[in-house]
Image (cartoon, rainbow, N blue to C red):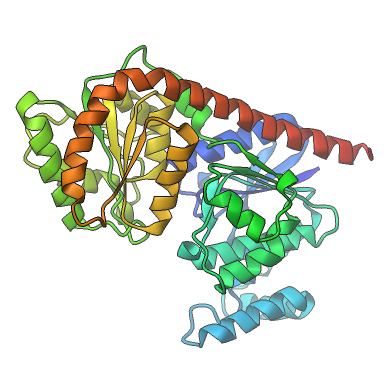
Length: 423
């Protein structure tokens, strides 16, 4: 059996701890189910792929990039011409293949073998597994279209089973390129596990997905995040902030947050605990956190360079103020209530989805509100006082989601094995 894995972190650098945990969970479970299967993870850096199991290796994504990019990507052409080329690639694959080979041979150092490897993998895959992510959205249009086209390639081989674990969908606008392609492709997916149901479920139903193929499981990182739980809450306030184009949070918001937060903690000298969950230079949580804590005298050391180090930092927290989704999930798995900061539709859906999933212990704050600093200041005291009473409920909710996640994986295992046996 051949299994192709679409990773959480496509470049393969794994410097976002949410991506690390999602990929580790998915790949280790799938490889464990079928130890004799050939499991290949698409990655830009095959040599840097972590070891998961003896039957797991990397498949260079160069071939995928070449196949999906065509002749018009990254050239100054009208957007509709690029869409036209994409349609040609889907509807006339052999012609597109010849053009891609020509491009690979004459323009891109002869990467014909890479194109062959990618196409051969999709045409022979028995199972395509898509790790947890929130990528089917207009926010990441290019990647979303590439991912949807990859699903289409695997389904076109006539035997490929496609599953998506730990997913969030949207925002997607009516009439967008992503909406049009998702309407074609998403009903083909055999099983979808959702992180949240508030936005993703109605969107999938609107796209024509059969409800019997959808399960609400929570996030795949929960089992790893729940390991090594502390016996009690800490006495600090965890701080995470995502300053990035897709979060629409800038340095001005960070400075406002720092002023309100330091006014709250100053009289009691409550320790602030850095919780960076992404170390990518272009969206460094470490740098963003420093802009919030600058000038405050009681900041815990930031030695977070791994997922286990991030979990250890959470042991020092009574509550967590977070601007990234997975930092919130890591905190909730530890029983630490979170205040979720958002300034974009993308993150609004994430934090409101978590609020609905956990029912108590998630407190979203809209940074676009005209008086958000005033409401935030009052909310801090409320969450601080409630934290001990919320802990057990949060842990129970996280453990329930871990169980639901296993149910989804075992459902896939049963279906695939029945297919292999001809049942």
